[in-house]
Amino acid sequence: MIELGIKRPGTTFSVPFGSYDGGSGASIVATAYVVGDIQIYKDGGTTQRASTSGFVADLTFSGETGIHRMEIDLSDNTTANFFEAGSDYFIIIGPITIDAQTVNFPIAHFTIGYEGAILNTTIATLASQTSFTLEDGSLLANAYRGCPILVQQLDDEFDIAIGYIKEYAITTKTVTLSADPDGHVMVAGDHVAIFMPSNVEAWQRELVAVPTILGVPEVDPTHLGGVAQSLLDLKDFADDGYDPSTDKVQGVVLVDTTTVNSDMVAEAPTVVAIRTEMDSNSVDLNSLLTLITAARMGALDDWIDAGRLDAILDLVKTAVDAIKLETDKLTLVDASTGVAGSIIEEIENRVLAASLTTHDTDIKALLPAALVSGRMDSSVGAMAAAVLTAAAIAANAITATKIATAAITNAKFAAGAIDAAAIAANAIAEAKIATGAIIAAKFGAGAIDAASLNADAIDKIRDGILPTQNVAFPNIPFVFVAASDHVTPVTSASGVSGTRSIDGAAFGAITGTIAEVGNGSYQLDASAADMNGGIIQFRLIATGGTPGAPDDVFLTIVTGGGV
Image (cartoon, rainbow, N blue to C red):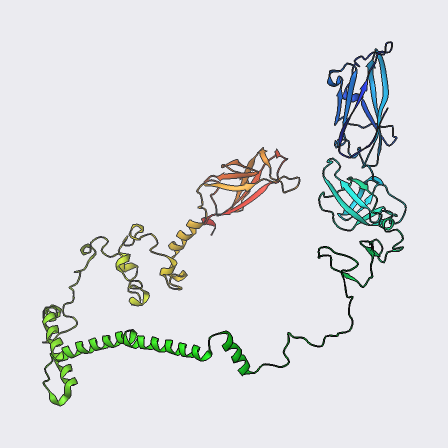
């Protein structure tokens, strides 16, 4: 039997073995060797792994007679959690036939885990990514404090997380990590390997017997570069050629011995001193003021001589000259009224003469052809009776676009000016009214009320809304639901029939038809006979269907005759 030692979780390994002639010892080929002949037992148990998934049985390895091979993939988890860190395994081959003999024999032994680990086990339960319990562990409190821990996914040798153990509770075998290690997201069943911590105390020897803070290493060196050092010495490691014996600086001074600081002034400077300093380092302030004044005056001169002011004055002069030219043309006919009066009188005369000349023809056209009692009267020119008739107006001569908004309102007509007697039959027909000509916005509040509508008008409205009595009414939808739960829609209903009660009379069979629409929905096409009443109640029935017979359905319909 081959001792394989510790095999890392999730890895794949193979084991060779040979078969020999029982008499001569010569290599011969075993027969009937298949994956079912590879038997693996865990932790001394007598039950072999249930699945052969992940096994390979190679009858002839590399073409060599009598050399066979078996292969095991530890990442295969077909038999859940069979391959676990910390567990022990035996491999047995058999039964196979060698030299006409049926044989079984152990071939290898191995353990799953990590070399160098002080504990190989698995996660039993997981509370978080920093706290979980182990399948196995030490009985000593905090036995694993400070230890590195490696957690590996059950079926992947490369999916790992590495952290450090902060606490270990022996009662529950609970590990608490110092921080979330990131990487692999841990779950129950993952492989766990715990390693020895760094032996800081052994490295420090006798320098520090007990650390100040438990778990935190301390270093207290007495020599640097072979030279004894004082704890108050400060070293400059940045200088090249550092010598511990000479490159020492004074330790911390607790008393302030500073007497003079040349970087500070004894008192605040005066204005004169500040100006003297400014003059010595920049342009003299007086010179600077002179330059600024000269610049401002130059800009002002430019604005007056050739800038905006000159242009404005030129425009004013041009306007004054134009006014003078026009006034020189006027005749001052009345010295007593002054110049202004004469100008105004002259303008009025000229405008009046032009106006009379222009409108002479228009005024004549506006005068009536005859007078009444020697004077003009409002009735003169009135249109004779029946001169303006419907026949005299061309089709579409008066349209919505020819009438201004709100030109015709209630206020434009006297009470009762337009009534039924005043409108000829068919004078207002549907074809005479453009689409959208009559909308809610065209009527004032209360313009059409119950008093404005006669009985016939109400009947028209009613018949337009409700089904018509004694007229077939198709496409009445309804749904059959299962009688078993009163919710599930019933499809493919069978034995479908219907009855109806008209105006409270006894139910009688319908003469209309019922058809399935789909998804439990059906429709009733009621005949005229079914609708011959004011209030119709239908009862719709089915004796079977999927998933079963449905509840009866009752429908009530009100026709125009029922209102």
